[in-house]
Image (cartoon, rainbow, N blue to C red; front, side, top):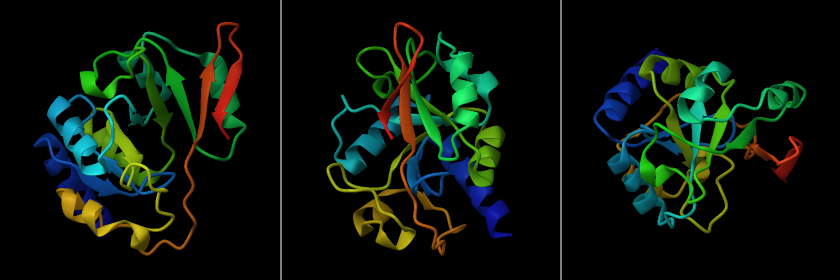
Length: 189
């Protein structure tokens, strides 16, 4: 019942422009509606993060990428399928997202989630959700929920109850981009 209640509350908060603290397929994330500029600004303020350091968005299906970027890298899907760790891909020509979320060069980082909670939330919300690690900028991302700073916990509109007791060590995703020759370049292993 916690799963369903968390999903329902998250949907309500996201639709109102609020921010959530939630489990992802990597580390615990701070999230909001990726199309809502005011909600994105709340995350920058909470993390004390410079706006020139863009954040990533989560999608539940590869087919949704072209709604948020004019580029598609079919080659990268084969790479992702062969890697056990979640992979975030930098796409050029971002569109239909909050302007303060898009990098100054017009790019956006996108990860297709495998996590059941995230997939369910994104599918029901019908839009991408921001995902940024649940730490103050400059500090390492927490490995477990219990390690999340109280300032972060007090600064969000809702904290998901589901998976707070996880003892699996969380790790950030691999980050890749595609160069001009169409080759995959690993930016963060």
